[in-house]
Image: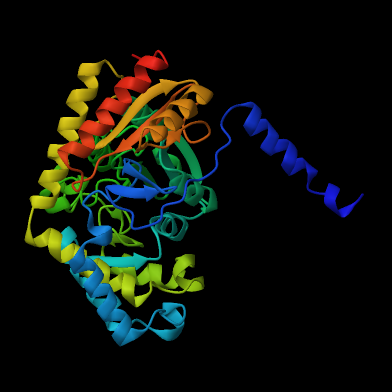
Length: 395
């Protein structure tokens, strides 16, 4: 076989994507990831970013990052268990624990690393993981890496969760119930109070990935656990530092003994270089800004309510969203991608989300609202949705 022929199967797979109408070429942003961006050389309203509060390019956050580079350089140098922690990382974990009102925090290099590192470290053979059917891919990967047995309950179906616990709890040592706090494709919330109730009834551990709740829900963005007033009831709270916080990284809020254990057994901490100083310092500043004021989160929710109301009035199906995440349901995959492209042609960037990220024929244009959006930005987006929705027969 010729060398060039060895990868022909990749060409065939790519061609299938093209035939299915879901092949994509990524646009290029020629500036910061803001509410309005220079996308492919054209002014574009950005509705595809997780930069919920506009912190990714806030002057205070940028200044803190620049100062850290001057003092610490650009890299952490090594794995923290080899080279140790910089004082900035110590400060970040202390501040996050105060912010989350939890005993301890362990920072990771990303939210994905939190899940693939923490889950496999806290359960073992003889344990059971019970996971929501629509949990994030990073949770699914983390569960796959664990040696524990696995079970999946129907999405947010507490009767199904209770059925599994009733049938299987007595067969295992530890049982870990895992859920997203906010489900990123639909914007709905996990029924955490009921999950906690079942966990207490069946003596289970609880694990919430609050990537899209951190900086969005609760007092000053303290998250879904704060929103439901469940402090002290969740054993492992995962948060990201790359969405509302605007930088990069993730963290686990938990007990001190868990933090100590993760430092010895969480593989991303043991085998990957720690967060860079500039990112750590920027994150500290972002968290301080949240702790100082609720203005950012209030503006985010005000913008989300404005957009959702207009979309419902136009007749769009925006699912069951309870958060600023607003899925505009289209359905068929190729049509979803045509819808997204037509929006971009009108200066509005909303990525089409299709299988395998979501189930087949549930494609959607997922709108991510930011506190930084102006009413003019949102009005431009609403008008674009109206025109494309009418032309493609969605409304």
